[in-house]
Image (cartoon, rainbow, N blue to C red; front, side, top):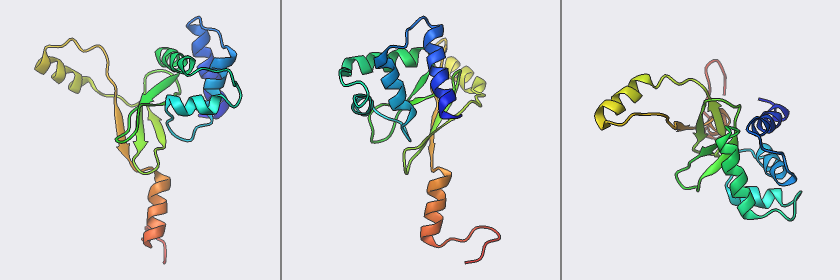
Length: 158
């Protein structure tokens, strides 16, 4: 998804939920928009203060929570990182995180019916939602690893 459309999608999500796009919220959105991977609230705070010097850390946390509630951002969890945030394409989706560089991708395929049914039977819970995050190595990191190891792909010569 193009950066401009992510930005306008997030702004539309806020508006649809009855929230105004304040200068502080715009600074937070811009910080998320320009991030190459998931970012922590502290990283958003440092970046957003470049354009909004009076922005407070509590405002960043409240804005991130609000953006998550309206589906404009998704929380991402890493093995050795604090909770991070990424802009979403909107709607129901899930993330895949590169274990080498931290890049985050979004996917919408979600055939969780059998898993949800099994979990409900096994636990007795009435399941009403789920969070799915996968990890792996992105294409750029795989290509970089292949080049550094001298591996040759199908049909290529060394």
